[in-house]
Image 1 (cartoon, rainbow, N blue to C red):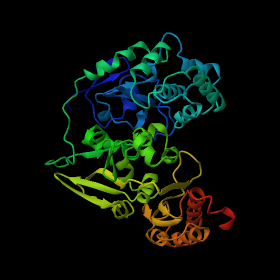
Image 2: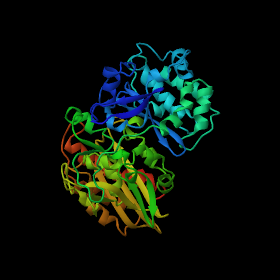
Image 3: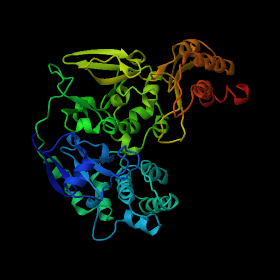
Image 4: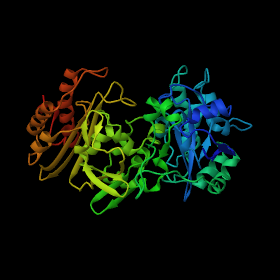
Length: 481
């Protein structure tokens, strides 16, 4: 294959191997950078985390990513920072804080912790202990325990509390401040210019453009594909949708919100547009995987994975979303509730891709909520979940969309429950009747996350929880017993 180039720490690195090879393997086996550790290979432990920098108009945006799930074809033209690329003559403040607070024992997990906390300081947001803890959501420490790590985070937050927030945008000022504080080595100051000047190899054929046919496997974030099919994909012909600018971004068009299919979940979570429309969405997103996974996982990838437990699919069903599908020079739009036809069966032709997700902009009288139950509060697949979107006028529901996850072979739009709620008053009676109807719409199965009986009993409780959360002044818990 043609050679590709990227920056690895402080130097340009040529690569001519398989585009489906994983960065973790190239770092350790080919380049001898063994500070990045080989752990779970599922994106769950954080030992392989690196920083991935992407050139943007305002500078470079750095995100933490799992190198065990990052194919080399998606590294082209970007800046990869490993633990070796952060080392300096003296310990950085991040390394020193972990050492001084007793947060290091065997050291296997330490590189990932250092990378993630450095990414936290690079992130651009106002420095807070809660965000520092969240930044380590995908990191596991096997022997130290987390109390010492939390002390290190608190120490860093105190030390860097005066860093000016940059609202999530790339900031040369933030990078310069971190270089001055010796969090980052000095070479970081030159990377934006060097990365802009890096000549990218010719792009490969991309599916979905006018007049083009698909001749390769489309890959979004790959956070599921490279867990289950890494060996198969290593030498396959792949097209990386994350490198298509036309599949990125969030925009408003009339009364519709349009999200590019390859937009990462973290970009949706941080979007000012989304936050204005759905203020609580960030809280719900925090329960969807870890930060490094959300930095890579894409909106359409989450949908076409077609998991019955897919959190985003359930939310989008409640938002009455549609998928825009493209093949060559033709497009068609399908309501998401009609897109899932059976277990892992989609209304998607072999030569089609999703190019955009659209949903009506919530009006001022709209109420949205998402409920999820798993064995853990965070970083877990739902044993059952539900989302609801209601428009309410004069304490009466004028529009309703309800969905549920992990209770059927597909992410399920609850048609009967949604239809029942239309025109009903907000009351405990309405909530109880809706819960009973929802229980009759599902066909759960038993697995390691719960029995069918458990899920059938749980979903009505989630429907009641929607009303308790959204309308506490009109629906009281004692009325629902």
